[in-house]
Length: 342
Image 1 (cartoon, rainbow, N blue to C red):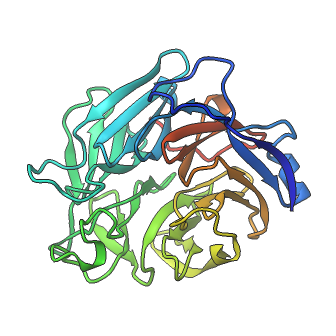
Image 2: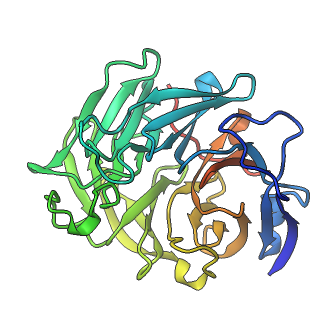
């Protein structure tokens, strides 16, 4: 392992939750494990701080039509909007849970995606559903699905739209339930991965992962990666997508138990893929960059637990990271697989 760069944020106070002005502060380190990383990150690539002072960031999503990044804070039930010219603002408040009584540590919205039809897809912990919202109006929230065969979901966590077949796929771990697996409100006996097809029919695709979390398609939509956020089995799984959209042939792509544990509680989390098939996986030690064959090429460690990432900017060559109270980004030489646009 070769350490390329290590830039510490020196004795700086916590910055307010707002966009930074150029030149941006840098944070953390880039670890190089294989020469092939040079094709993805230049020797001078650094993690830049875009914003800080948040509570617990998740669900980054680039919306190309508006040149903006959306990301969520499920603890404060807020979805933020950031763009280079306008900086930071609140996009939605009081989202993810519509109840009146307190509900767990993370009642808000987590994962975000686009459906390719001008709608935002939202995984809502407290309301235990996947919802759809027209981006143009920011009103007219519609429940897409909140149960499987009459039993309410645990707490949908992350969602992704297939690039061509019109289906959405989402994970349903127990993290949004106040008592998680032991919660008396739990109605399903497992944590599954589900598919809602273009007609609205929901099928249970994966049932043997204890805590399915992040998920991402390859550019051709023929492969789906799913992370398992369980310290006892911290793996990234790889599935073939059949022509009818069903998943098959699940196998371990990468075992994150082989990674050093840098911070307490780090487990596999959000995933993204680039056009060359490399996988970017949040987990122990930061964001792992993996080749299509599962070789560890490098690690982005911002010094905080990384929850997810998203490709953004023109050409999808900027990688945004949500990491604890920080929103960071790094310029790459790769081109990301981005969310379906309108």
